[in-house]
Image (cartoon, rainbow, N blue to C red):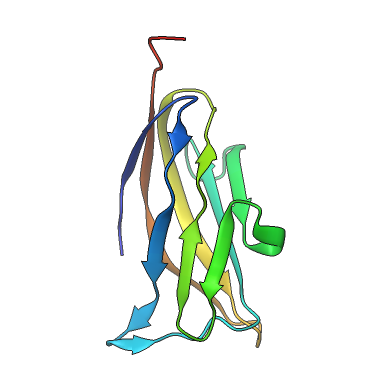
Amino acid sequence: MSYNFTHIKGDTFEAVNFALLKNNVVINLTGATIRMQLRSECGSLIALSLTSVASAGITITNAAGGLFKINKQIINIASGNYLYDLEIVFADTTVKTWLSGEFLIECDITR
């Protein structure tokens, strides 16, 4: 699934909540780790890295219910159009990437 974000450099990114479903059935996130990275292109340096480990940018809010969020946070990376994906490593070590897209960071005019 593709989902695009737009954000102004240095502003507070408001939390975004997700419910993980497959064929309308909840995907259990118990024991899972979620990671998300922004890069200017595939294989380039990481501009921003978030993870659910210690709620470092992502929080699993209800594991059994498949609920998680990208936390409210200030995103202050160089303006530009980035690619991202959101990878889930389940307790049984299965890895799935179901969400990806573009993450546009717009220039902050007023500083």
